[in-house]
Length: 204
Image (tube, rainbow, N blue to C red; front, top):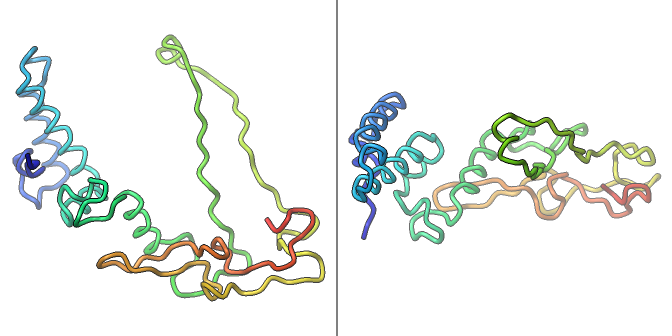
């Protein structure tokens, strides 16, 4: 059974503003909320349908993907859109806005790579979830190597320009109608390759 159009579910036009989407969702959600219709499976299904439609259309990135690919944008391995739309959209935005390097030019000598995202899982009890909890966590961090002063190369040696990306730190690939830049797999975004790494930090 094919899914209904999200705009049709909310009863709005494709040109609807965020305020119009929110107003339409609130009005319809109030009418079919499960608390108002206990035991009514049809109302429960409609409420879930409304919630799903609003979650997509109220998010700018998801809405753009839906407008272009429809429901296939959020189905793994869908025939019309990328398999992982969230990664695809982040690649597009990164290619447009980058991380301070600018497009088409090599990285500056003092450029720094964006650090990896950090995640910390903390288990809390029900009372703590209600009353709140203060916790101290240890976050690993990196400092500049004193031996090579951050170059990553052994004293007396130099890094060379990466041949894969030409020193840009990025390589371009085509995905459908888009040309997307990704981090160079050879140099990891540094734009240079170290043949003789520092003994202190091993080139990092």
